[in-house]
Structures are given as structure tokens and as C-alpha cells.
Image 1 (tube, one colour):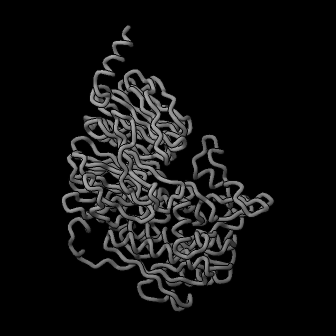
Image 2 (cartoon, helix red, strand yellow):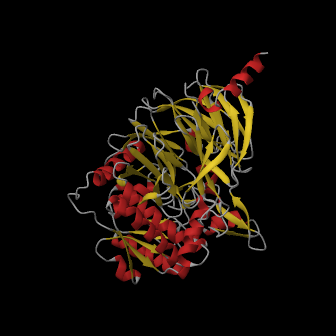
Image 3 (cartoon, helix red, strand yellow):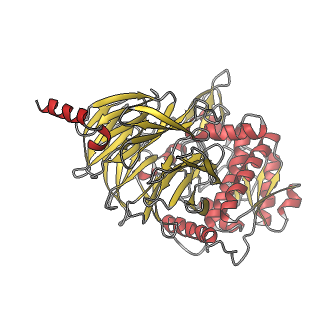
Length: 282
Length: 322
């Protein structure tokens, strides 16, 4: 299915994606062209993010068995990975420097970079292939209001959070923290893009991620999506009290009157007129 | 006088076969409320010990199946079970292993087989209800949730919340025959009575997927409540012309015309409706409202709520006997 140069509605898109996958399995036939694995390179990720990426890849592989599709995680330096044949995306980027380097390499190589580790505002809006599942510093600042805000917390329970936290704990004997969630989510958005777009080509994945009606479930109870202007994932954050316990969700649920959840989430961080990219390619 | 005559009739015949009854699973108070659907009087409150959620009546109306889980969602214990309530004696008379944290399930039309989703294990299991033995455990998507069986008993659809998938179990072979993608975070599944269509609610995208069962293929996706309604429960009218969806986040029921693939009406019900059921004649629609601790009754002709019944704490599901 061509994703570019062909305007199809979301429903038609879902219908086609569904038909393709069902036919593949129901028929039991080998596809005409063997499905190319989704190949992801892990770069500059700390131990927690690496665990999150690992869980994401394992879960994707499991879903892949239902559809005859595969995922591969490769490791190495950003330089060696970006140029690797068949690579669809780099994932990781702990800290502004490594994230900026990975972004630049991805843009040059024509692959995606999913930033799962740097909140630096100066990276937001840089490069058309660079997406951010880590929240921006502006989002954290808006959510914290004097205290501290996090992307995820091992004590979260609602909206399937307990199930995700339990899967992570069962796998690694550790609680899932913000960086771990970001790593897991980075793989999830790429994998869903590959399944829905029925492609592992970076251009097709990007087209799916930036579609105005694409939605993701991050087990946060809100429909999550990427902002068109800086490819930042719209998402709520969790405010912690002095003891480090979750004291609230920002934005507060149902606080927006008639606002859609997307409009509410856009009140966190930089708006459409304020791309904050500095020192990178817009 | 009339009331005494009714009472005499109730005492003279087994309640199950005579009058339609509602059974409501109350997650918070750990019991099941039994209601006379005609008079709307509560007849009994049946303690079940654990947290009850998914609930269904057998086709003959003599038994009610209810999924029970303990307080530790991802640990399997002897307290996680599918329990059977005998309608005549209003007691739990049997329990079957339900895997960890059983929530939704399907029972075959002849009452011989049970299919349950095991959320934590990422599997669905089939149990022979005559022997109590597990006869198959199948890998489905991640976080399997909704389970629905086609009316003739051939197909079981299992939704999986994290992988956005539906796995199709062929009950003749007890194998996964197909899998397909639906919208984001699929929850419940219901079939039309003629078995030609299935409907899946998608909580995070706020949509209903319309599925052609012959091809196991999504043929339409309908958005409800601007995609913000957090739909869960779904029920189909007997003639298949209307699909009713409980929007937990919007406290409404969306009435969908599946042929036109659009929402044709909206019914305001109690707070956080979750489970939803229709009376056998299709006239009455019931929603279990988790936050208002009641069941709303809507008239499907006028599409208006005509009453509500106070039940236990945090009602989850509602089943109707014929």
C-alpha cells in the first residue's frame, strides 16, 4: 500500500490494514514477498531505557507471530547503525548531546530517530525524521508547578498501567520508571506504524506517525499522538509529592470543559507557533 | 391482589424459566444483584466472595456465569474463577479455573465449553464444562480482554488491548485461525444474532469496529462521542439493525446504525456505564453504571431512560435471562 501520494481516510486505512493482515494469516500462505523485519538500532540509552526497549521489542515480536512479521534490535554506535542496511529507526538518546548526534545521523541516513531520553527543548522541531516520546523540558516545567513531574511511575494502576508495570517487573525485577516507559513506547509507536502501514520503510513509518488522526495507547488512559509542529508526543505527566509519590496527573482529567483531550494535552509545553529547535535542521 | 397472584405464580414455578431476570455483577461489594426485569424489584443479593466482573446467562436461563478475581490482578490463585450461579437456588454451585484475573469469557450455546481470556499470560483458554478440564491454551495478542462467540458457536473472537488485535479461534480445531488489527485498545466484542457481523469497542480511539465475520475483516470504523467516550460494553439488537455502545467516559449510550456506519442517537444514562445488555425481545436496554451504583433502563423504541435500579457497589456487568 502506498502511503504517499494517495489520500485515504483513516477508516479506509484501518480497513485496508486489517484486510491485509487477516488475509496473510487466514490464508496460511507465504506472502509473495517475505515481510522485511522492522530493524531498530538502540543508541545511547541508559539501563532503564534499554530495559524498556527490550520489553517493547519482545512484545512486538510476540504480536508479530500473529501476522508473520518480525522485529530486530541491533546495537552499536550511532554512526555504525545509521548507515546500516535495512535500518528503519534509531531509538534512545539519553542526554542532549547524544540525542542531537543521533538525530543528525538519522536525518542524514534517511531513517527515523525516536528520542526516548532527552527533554531538551532545543531538539524539539529539529529534523523531519526526529520524533520525541520523552516529554520536553517545557512540558515538565508546566506540569511540575514547584515540585517534580515524571513521564511514568511504577505505582500507576489505572488504564492498564498496572498490567504494564507488572509485565515490566516480572521481566526485570525492577519498577518501570520514566526512561523505561519511554523506551517501551518508542518501540510501540514504530511497531504499530509498521503493522498499520504494512511497511518497514522509514518514509511510510513517518507518514503514519504524522497523520493527523493517528492515535496511540501508552497505558495512560488518553489517546496519544505526535504534534505536527515539533513531532513531540502529546501526553499527560504525573506530578510527585515531596515523598516521591504520585500526587496528580497533569492535565487533570476532565478539566477542559469542552476541550478535546488533544487540545488539553497541547496546553503542556510549546505551542504550534513556538518550535524551539536550535542548532539543528528544521 | 395482583401482587399476591404474581407471588403465587413465582412460588409455583422455577423462577428461571418464567420471567426475565437481570443479574448485575458488583465489583465493589463483591456480590451479584438479582432483579425481576418486569417489576424492577431486587429479588436477591448473592454474595460471590471475590470481585465479579464479566457476567452471562445460559441460553435456558437456569444458570448465570460470572468471572471472579482476587485482589492481586496478576497472580493466579484458587480464588480466580468462573463461577456458576444456579438461578433457582440463587447460589454459587460450581467454579471453574479462570486463569489469572479473569474478566471476560464466552460459553458455547450448548453450555459445554467455556472460553476465557488470560490477560497476564497473553493467552485464551478453552475449558470443557462437563469435566472441568482445560482443553486448549492459545497464544493471542498482548493483554487479551474481550471474548465473544458467534451465535452458532463456530468462532471465538478475543480482543487484546496492548496489541490492538482480535484473534479468531476456530472452535472446531481450537486453534487461532486468523488475527486482525482493530482500532486502539479494543475491549468488548459482540456478534449479531445472524452471525454475519461482529462489533468491537476501542477504548482509547473511542470507536466501534464493524467486522465481516465471513472474512474476519474490518469493514468499517465508527467514531462516537468525538472519540472521547471510552467505550466498553456493546450489544446488538436481534434484527442486527442497531448496535448499542456504553461510553464509560461520557455516561452515554451511542446508538449505531451499522449499515450506514454512523451514530443515529445518544442516550444519557447513569455514571460510567460499563456492561450493557438487551432484553430478549429487544425492547429494553440495561447499562451497569460503575460510578452511580445503579442500572439504567432505556426503552429502545423511544431511546429514553425510563428508570433505574439501585444495585451494589461499582456494578460492572449486567446479564438478562429470557
